[in-house]
Image (tube, rainbow, N blue to C red; front, side, top):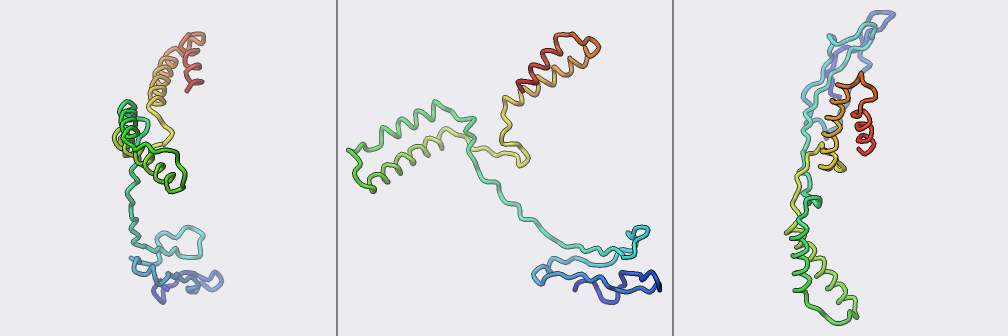
Length: 175
């Protein structure tokens, strides 16, 4: 029990006597995080019969490093193709694969070659934690275009048959 003893938390309506039916418990593992636990009569709302209990815990959040990912949208495809072709040429060509051991080695070699080409041609991205994974630079360009058209359409809002309104509708449909 973390609320100090002998602190009243409830006034009985019939007698007006203060009692303590409210208890605050904290697990043994979490007691190290306890900063304070006390009643806050100044925060008591009109008509309430219980005094609020404020418990403050020091909970530090561990922030993990976001995983490093490759931005395949910005791949230098010429470099990737060259590295992949060179890596595949340098691989030892064997005759027909007849055992699972040979198959596993061939798959490992091909995977290693592809990974080396990816490392050479695909940049590492450091995305903002709030960014949307589906948002692309093309969508940004389209959004700017729609914003500009919206501003022009607003200027011509009194002229309902102006071309800018039609153009804006078409662009919004594409967006």
